Image (cartoon, rainbow, N blue to C red; front, side, top):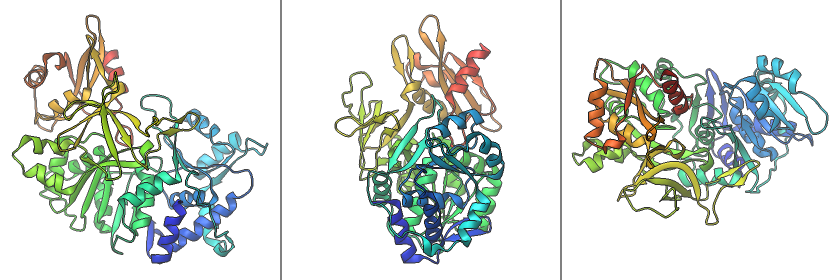
Length: 510
């Protein structure tokens, strides 16, 4: 099993179909196959053991993904928003290897990391000349074979580091291929189907989208830099049928449509979201603006090769139409596990499995689950279960509700409480647009509960009123002692709340 198997099937079945489009530049499936072969051949130099990429999304991205698999070496997309010292640290872990980057970075980094002294060889390629060479070189010179070893490392993805130093998650060929075969049907996309991708290349959703799109035969329109207006313009111009966004992106799109009755996107049939907690008000408003669109909430992790549970289109419609609060509440769940995935909720202290309705640690098991980090080995237990470090609960029907990272648990007077539980209650108030709950030092209780609230447009409310709102619905110990009001919360580019920054800001302000 190898990602190249998926591309070979696609090139053979619909080679002339456009695979990826960036602006006016396009790559057909056959061109992608040929270009991957040319780049793979250049990597076969007996000293290149990694292929890294440091740049925004471009046509070089899918070429590099498949070329690395063809050559039998890991592909590592790097976060181009990191500082030079942070990048130096990551690049040092990828030697001996080869780095694809933009001209400015190639000039800046070249003097620092280019050498040919045996074990520390890193070459720096500027992307435009590389792409030009790939188009001009005779693709028939490539070696038409590649390894089918399922244990080969396909992708190295450095975690975001929002709670610590980034570490390289290992995704082997078997994990990614298992994910694709378990979630996508071959040739399931019509030729006119088009998917809009605005997720950065170093995010698992971006990598998984490449493999999934190739296997289904869907054209991918790349958007290197997101803005709500450009997203809407591109979706209309390209008649986009499918799209994936993180919660902050969807919130910006809704803001851009303020005052409008609809989004005016008749071609858009499916809109998926994930990567962070979606406020209930945002998804409900989105469903009003996109009434003919199927919504899907996808929950997954880097270590699980992307999605492990889905709240599907019918779940969204049922929740919106129901007057039963149990069903209605499912709009804020992440749905049910994929057929190939098992999920278990366990007590964080003794590890026992918890019944429906009780919150604990989310454990996951399945063929697509890696749970491995470079230099640390596998984090799967002896039965193949992976501790996601996310907190959550399952209801009686098997719907999964996230409580946030267990690392963010607030310990007040010996009682563990999840920030997500308090956030969910605050988000049910119509005046609350977004919220973050964190623990702050407290001399009496060890930690106290603090909340930062972003108000909905043209609304006002006092901290005391919101405290009473929580107190009426949760135990008094979970009521925030402090509520601050901000214009916006800090998120990273993949939609994850930077809770650490919220905590630090509150503590610094006293």
